[in-house]
Image 1 (cartoon, rainbow, N blue to C red):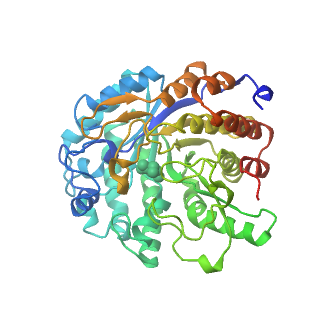
Image 2 (cartoon, rainbow, N blue to C red):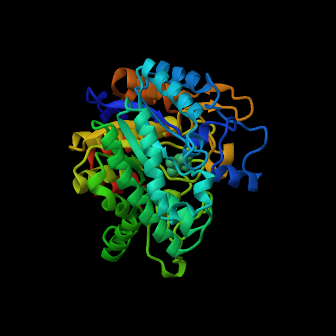
Image 3 (spheres, rainbow, N blue to C red):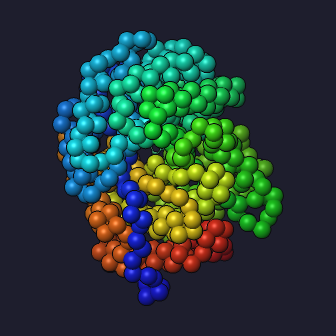
Length: 463
Ligand code: BGC
């Protein structure tokens, strides 16, 4: 298979590469912060041990050190988020020290010629908002707009903004099911949160436009892409489409007039079948609890590649999703997250390589993709998993904070410096053993098929 692969896949001149983090996940415990997640972690002390602090970006010099590392690897973009609970610890009280700390980080990015992409809300909420009912209470729409106006007033030099991160995931695991704060468990809660999140986005969009007219604004949507186990079964296909619609597309549809681009978080795709005996209203639990109605089908077979969190590696799904989004919305796309929990860095190089090939192929097929951001810059606090799941291209010892650049970071860095993918060279240098032939097959299939075909061909044949 190797011999049939092209040598080099060049990326367009203006395409940008980078990595992503979120405030609560990297900032550590220092400084004043009273968010719903601070309360939640205090109530659930097993998630983070007292001596675990992670990358500690809130401490002067720590974020800067990692930004220097990223600059050294050639990164051109850094996605990060601002913590509402730090900026507005009590209603109407603006913490200027917090704004100054974010200013230092943004200035450091500019100094290193790295473009900031800022998320205004990455799951966490100030405790004073949580006391009022979090996203269930419509007053949050106005409060959020006020917070956004404070930030937009201070940071007119930031061009690309994401108002929210994964509203679909938040509604599902914080309101429909009780895994994330505010731990509600009801359809009415979910419907209210869904509605208020989308309204808050729309209002924030216009606030950003009024302060920063040239800004580009979107949401980082989660796309767990579901396809039918049997693509020839019209009922199963219909069912997969419905699940995709309720899981992600309805959020995009709901705000499509206030999106300058589509922010796309993609980790994995799943085969789905319709099995009434397994049907539960709840599709997903926390990431460690397998989804209930979903059959992983062939991708779960013993030799299939899966991440530490059990997510199958299916770049063909990614390619199909990108084509689909482009056709449906006619907007530019930024890949706001893509990555793998892989503590030992056994699959990450493989994962990044095949997903970047999928992006390259999508671009050839006419999809307008502007940036690719790997989740994550550094190992960080993986929500319910604490520091036990490691997504970073740089390893961070959660207790000592010691950094170690992973091998996969060098693969990514090679692609950035070459502005393209030297397939054979990268497979030789970074992908080992039987992974190499497997990667070559995936790449071959991505380059020779597209759309539904690509999906069929990246999955092992049905037995
Ligand atoms: C979230 C991140 C999270 C990552 C890995 C995304 O859904 O935006 O906050 O760490 O997935 O699970």
